[in-house]
Amino acid sequence: MNNYIKYILVLLVVTAVAYGGHYLANSALDVNEQWAALDYSLKGLYFFGSFASLIVLIVLITINRIMPRNLGSVFLVVISVKVLAFYAYIYKALNVAEDNFLKYNFIIVFFIFLVFDVFVAFKALNEDEIKA
Image 1: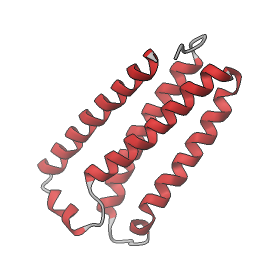
Image 2: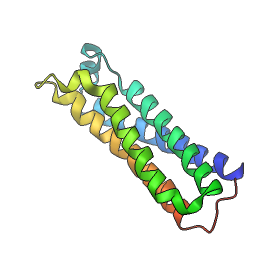
Image 3: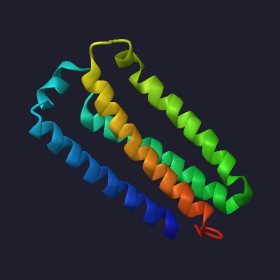
Image 4: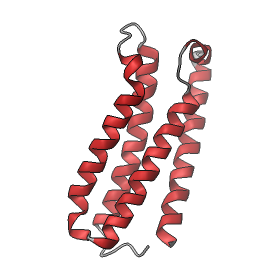
């Protein structure tokens, strides 16, 4: 249970720091009012991303404990499902060609959590076994 808690705390810190920095950058660029005109919010994007990464984290640690030789394959499947989930979440906005504001903010959030997922998979693959 120790590694679950450690990685969940890292996920919370990454989410908080990234959200704070992203919000401050939007404030500095004076674009926060553009969120009011959208069906999405920066907080919603970060909530969805952190929830999806939490699911990936739980699956990876569990698979590493049960069948560590299949971790790489499971990682690819889970990330593919996560990409599809993100696509389904943002699908309505992608049809609006002139709305690049949301697309750019979304891709930033997506890559932040993708890097976290790769970090967890890297740590799991390079340890003999994560003791959960």
